[in-house]
Amino acid sequence: MPEFLDEPDQLATVPAAALASALDDANVSDTWIVAQQLRAPTLGIVGGNGLDPQHLRRVRNQAFQNLVVGTIAERVFRNSHLADLEAAGFIVCDLHERGENRDYAVQRDGLELPINVKVASTMFRNARQTVGLDPQDCIPISTYKAIGASERVPDLVYIDLVDFTLREKVDAFMHALQGSLALAWALLSWYGGPGLKHAQDEYVATLFDQHGDALVKLAPGVTSYRVISAQRVLAIMRANPRRVPGLGVPAAGTGTFNAEVNVHVSVEQETVPWDDVAETLRRQGIQAVLDQIRQTEPCVQPAPTL
Image (cartoon, rainbow, N blue to C red; front, side):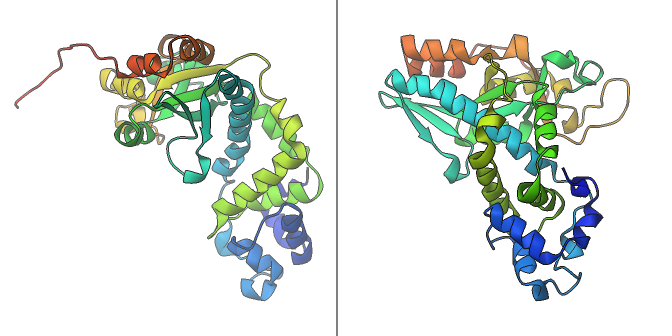
């Protein structure tokens, strides 16, 4: 892997033609401003090779790099698990193009189970001190996304691939890349600007077209998908605010606050294996799973008037 990933300044020494060629090979279009500038360096105004420093990030784009991990999780889940439901008579709709909460929808008999596929690949090593969970038993769910889902897609379930080794495996794979894909990876990791998201998607599509089989093999060979509904995530948040340090509850014993606003849930106690949910779908239908999501029970909660 070239040193560009860790030394972004060195990208400025690469001729524009080489950078543009790398983007061509990665099928990155001119919807991204940086691609435009590299293919017509006079548009860059500054910088000898068309790379405009105003688009250079201070740190690598972790969200872009997470796309590869997330795509692995989605492809394995789609091909290894949702395909089994299709064989059992369910309809599986791919909803990625809509840009909403749902990645997939499982449908039958006029009912739908909406699904969002996620991956937990980085261990929260301070989980015990911060949220009261063992690091191996702790995964994060975005608080804001769960709230949004409860309003727009109230029956949404999160499917989490839990594998705390996957991040390192993917990083090692990407560092071993050579040629155009390695150079384009560095560009997209360090540079932003208008059109970036579309360019990232184009790159990831090309990456998986060329290396998809090898990337998918990085996922665990046994089922590691766990399920929790957006409704249960919010119930955990209400019952135990300490699980959401970013909302303003100090990390235990530190007096400081976390930047990420996530609900941290227990894998063993608060999620269930996807295989169990799939078995319920096959034996009892979608309504049985929806009933579990919508289940309520009476409770007493504080209602102060002062």
